[in-house]
Length: 55
Picture 1 (cartoon, helix red, strand yellow):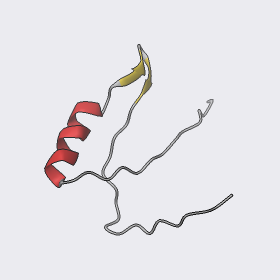
Picture 2: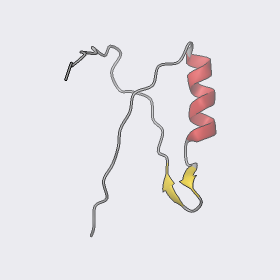
Picture 3: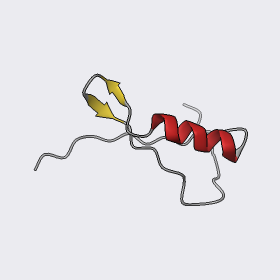
């Protein structure tokens, strides 16, 4: 079995209602016709710490 690369991202919305609507609209959608299908899930943690790394 060939395992493809996966990209993960965290997105913050202004409210839970807006997040639910976005998830409903985007989950299962293809980026390109017939491929690159999005799997949208809610984060499993309540608090995320973001650290800025300067290059």
